Length: 445
Image (tube, rainbow, N blue to C red; front, side, top):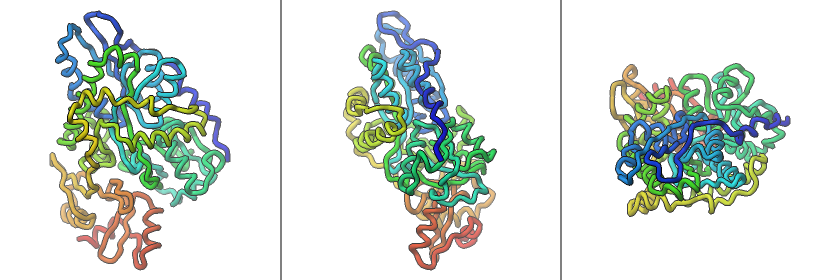
């Protein structure tokens, strides 16, 4: 079936009205306008958490350059309106996902208002930030089952890119094999609940939120693609050249917020939850000590390479033409902001996946070497668990223990995000079988 015309995709470029941004010149008061997405929680070190910590304002106050600085924080649901505002000269610095970043680059060049990718926020080297989910009672159990079904996604987003690539690997034409519904995340979530969509492909934090609320279950873990996905910070080129010290102050503040998140993951999750209304347990799933996302502002070569591979997906959807990724990526400002610390950050590797329990009333989580050990702890402290997380046995993607698909292989208990990967393991290991969460708890106790 052909997907519906991508009329809404044109709205990616529709200009919106907003208050002004930092102006060139010597006025004593300079307003810096930052566009962010509070609920896209892998951008928090450049948005929600950064704002709550006040780090950017402190960095600006330390410039002592004769100016008084004011920060205008503007919150959006997606990256598209941030791009529209940037190309209109009304937002100076913005954060968004990798596919919207490419649209940001293309639109900026098209309008003669070029932008530059200046840092990274949250990333996952396998692609685990995007997930395809179905309704809790859905009979769909594999990507192949999506053929001729209605699938909601946001065209031009990283989640749409995951959907396109996953369908292609499953042998389904992403244009003709499904009916694609181009919807904002909240609209798609409602469509899934109402039954007007069979599946939903979305970016953080929607899949985890819906699963946590019991409104969806995972069908496909984006990490199965084994292709990096990330969120980053983009700045208007003219702003960066006119106010380099201000941009560097932002990037220093972002690094401070990153260090705070990594050192205090539970406190950071609670802070973001308070600001966004998202459950802290969902925020921690993505942003925790062993969460799906890794945070660091360094622009890693593998992320740039992935960005180049993403161009073809957007071109096929007729959302962009060619994008010169090399000219869009500009790491000079983050290198200067972080100084000698930059090389060390670039060399850091993501934390190894681990099983974690968040006990009620605790300010720290507890890690376990194996999922079975976590289950034994949960079984012994049934009323004292706020949340329990386990990494997918194949991809390492963290998921809620009670929402995972469990496989018993002898004495070993293995969790999976999606049923298809669990079944693949069972098929390859004689004697292994899918069990319920209750059965897994009983075996581990």
